[in-house]
Length: 321
Image (spheres, rainbow, N blue to C red):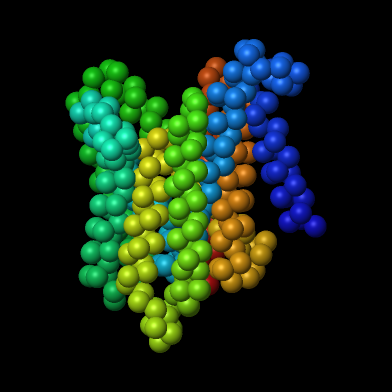
């Protein structure tokens, strides 16, 4: 009953979201076309809702993927510093004033992806020296990397011009504000690519969620599967963060909520986690647009307010085990 009510609430909010904002929209004028309401709806509101949906799907699915591969409830691209690496890469591109397109992709997006991917390989390399220390050491390593990236970003901020600093401040708070369909389509492709790869290796993930030894006995090349899935996830996260900035805690919260609602194996939670993450971020974005403030609250602040206490709860719950 609770599951159905929760899903129904999020789905209703998803369909209401395009009509919520500073300007009240008339459905009749939207359907007429060639009106201001139609322009706002089709060029601003609808692309933003779909962008939030696919972004939430990427974040939630990446969180499930990292928690499964590392067998740790606190592992996400955000807590491991991968999102921070993508932010630093994008920040470097902003500082250098790179706005050119390379093979049709913006330099900021490419630098963001490079930062995320570099962090993944750095974590994999350094984890070889932490085998006797457990996954908690890897989590601390990710936090340390995140703090280092933040320090470098502060140096860039200190050396930047007023315009660049304003861009960096807004960027690091996270935003789902988009105009047109370019970015929603790009993020949709990244989300579907990630979902396809995770589905392709869902049985390997099920075995690896128990232990690498169990998976190896079944003939799974665990190192290859781990590197491939982390690379694809980093691609999706790098592209997303380079556009929206960091949006934390979605990858931490949603996999745990789905696990509570559906205590089944990972192969049956992949699609549910993706859809729920997308709907949840749309609801958070709708909240950020409806709060009575002088300007729209950045989405990163909303998710941090929700996710911070949840993160503390998970740490305490794991300590009691």
